Image (cartoon, rainbow, N blue to C red):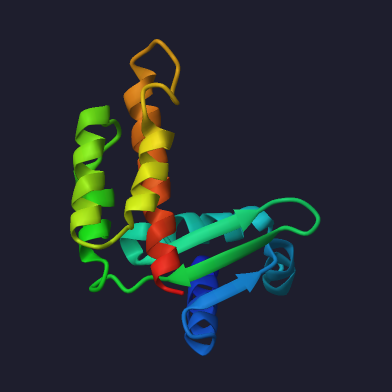
Length: 155
């Protein structure tokens, strides 16, 4: 007998295929459909629909909240995916981040304008805290911005 997590995963993948790679749904509606707790839906999304599996998840909580799942074209965006999974790590210096950003501009993944926005967000000036956390925060911001770029490239 299949586990509920497997059933939910297959259901979502079928819906994604039918909707041409992007799906928006309500977490509570999905939990009601499967007669499970919303945390079970969260578990499936967090473990089966990750960036490493080729998906971008966007969510908004609250009464009008939603979950948007986008299937990414991993071959097309192989460089960005590799950068996210291997190149950045859990922390990154400002200098190393700037090198990655320049590489993305050189390979036409992002525009000069977008690179300026990312540089502003990850600068030491923007992350104005006097600690070792700065490089961890910078890595997290850079990963989030690159992930958003991957998702936007799909549209």
